[in-house]
Image (cartoon, rainbow, N blue to C red; front, side):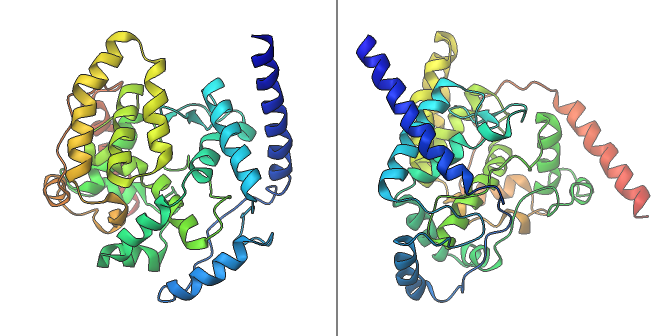
Length: 324
């Protein structure tokens, strides 16, 4: 045991040393990723390959890593995330929101997702390039946060539309779209945007699948995301997240939620290519049929739907008063 403990301490020490080196270059933060020319993917591929072998940042907030730094950061972020579930602004293995009280420890799961992405991001980009909707996303580079989305406008959409459903979901779960870390460790700017898009659209998946923010639901969505999108970080979360559930909840996860996630995720349209922001007015049920989605088993919500709808209605009335 003493030898294993010593090895773990050495691993953590090496990780923290590299992590500090990486974080020293992160003081400026990151805002929007710089767009690349949409119709020059083949040219960009060679440029980005040459760029990845250098230490020059490819976009604002980019922190280039060599293969060793990437490997240590992946192992270290996984270890630290599992050791301290409060890291990442959420339970990283569950993706559950928690208070953002320690900004330096909020990007562990984000680092894990980026350092383990591998070939999954090029596959997702190819899926986006394969549809007109996905190509438009890559061209526009939309971002999802409280400055780009008008919550009061969404509250004015009729009941049953996706826009109204999304703002009601936010109210019911008590979250905002401002909890996503910017991308730092992916060398290709376009692939970095694909990862950012995945993070910022995660709550859309919750909403359209009618899943709340709790451990069981987050794990169900991780199984869904892995089958539908193929991201390794979703597989890691799905593999290790259930270890923190009690026997009863774990049994329900595997008997009810996982079968739904595997069947629905494998048959549904690839959700990375959905331009959610252009579908606010669309009927939710029609969207589900179009995307090949159906509701999972009944989930456990912390807030009644009627209460969330009442709050959304108040937001709608306030928006009407400001814009008669």
